[in-house]
Amino acid sequence: MTKTICSVVLCFFLFADSAAAQDRTFIKKLDSIVGFRKAVVGFSVQIMETGDTISLNGDRRFPMQSVYKFHLALAVLDRVDNGKLKLDQKVLLKKMDLHPDTHSPLRDKYPDGNVYVTIDELLRYTVGQSDNNGCDILFGLIGGTSIVDRYIKHLGILEVAIVGTEAQMHADYKMQFNNYSTPKSATALLLKFAQGKVLHKSSTDYLMKVMQVSTSGPKKLKGLLPPGTLLAHKTGYSGTDGNGLTYATNDIGLVVLPNGNHMLISAFVTMSSESEVVNDRIIAELAKASFEKYGAS
Image 1 (tube, rainbow, N blue to C red):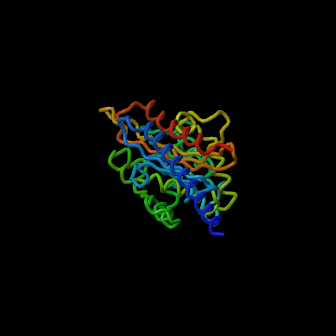
Image 2: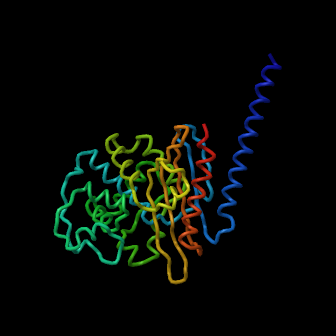
Image 3: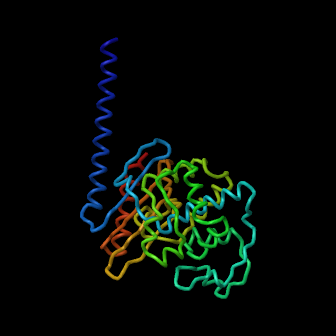
């Protein structure tokens, strides 16, 4: 009996050492991707079914930029679930709401405003195409950024702050640093969402689909994944200042792996002197490495 117990214990430690070695190898792989870049990179990945988790700078705060439109969408859809709003509810799109010097396919479609659009359309533009005007209209509709901030914290996601609107970030570049998340917090929120612990199933399925068909950031998380890989994601991007510094290039999302598991992944790049192509490539390589590690049968 003693010999059997010892054998079991020995096997356990051999397995544990093997798993730890694999994690060390994976972390070295991640370090090789980011270590020589002129940027600060935060990264977190978790497998929903197994709980396997790895992160780099996972507890560091990064400016979210448009990643926070995912958080906003959750808050809006929570109100839909509770009967306070409806997806087919119409909202007057005023010309004064369509600011000219910002990314807004919504404005391009309705340049003169003064039309009614549904909350569904606002969400699809805001999340799927990262529309800044649509984002601020939705913030106004539910009572402002503080409402979204409290809602996300109520879900148990504490290392996050949602303070400024898109218009406020455009007016003062420093504001973007007040809208922060840690990579671990972003992944934790994705996990709760994917597990159906945030919204009703109908709203979960709706937002998942909007994020799957998103046209934003084709060279970020999805850039090096195999064609046909199912990804639901939300990007964020600050642009580059006159000195060639990029404050935020981000992408968070859920990947369906070949083995059927679900990978929650969050990648943030800040204070980067690299080009937009390189910043996107960093995120794409981190996603590819994670896909290869966790996607095997």
